Image (cartoon, rainbow, N blue to C red):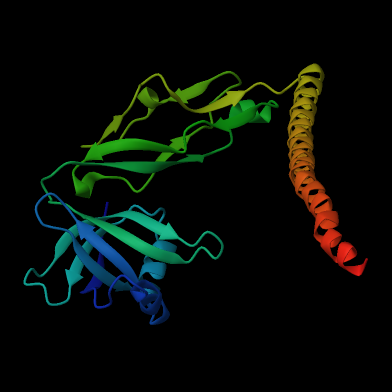
Length: 255
């Protein structure tokens, strides 16, 4: 994995309301951590992060991080996590994992496929079972992504973790028998009908559950109203019984 230069700055704004003010100023809050130094709060230029991610094949980046005011000229770090806004997709926060050149690290790498599978040309369906795999190696040897050529994959065949040839110096972790991509046979008319029926049944069950919840809610409301009326009745009867007694002395006085 090639290194990319990035400049960061010590965090200047506090946590309460600071992150929003920071983003409004064109910077993004960040943090760097690792085994050999305590965590440090940083901030980076949002445009620089956006450009780095836009030109990269994935969010796995190895950085030559320069922190302003730090006595160390550069710090080798992996872009460990990027938090995005759920609607706009804007970057909200980034995590850096500081590493050493001679220290093996483990990361999750996205899986990409190339070519058109032979089985797909025959009517099969390419199934992407795993979208990421775990790899381990020195920072400079780590791949940004794992690419699998599926051109020779026939119907009923699969590529397993153990079938992938990793780059030199890199180990792919996990159960070697787990499928990563596979070509499944096309569904028959009967299977498609059965799948549609299952979906309809599932949708009906959801609707029934919803109706039962609504009925239960209406029943609870009715019981509550009934209870309130029952509680109010004795009070009303007591008030009615008390009213004549209060009027009696006035009537006697009139005579």
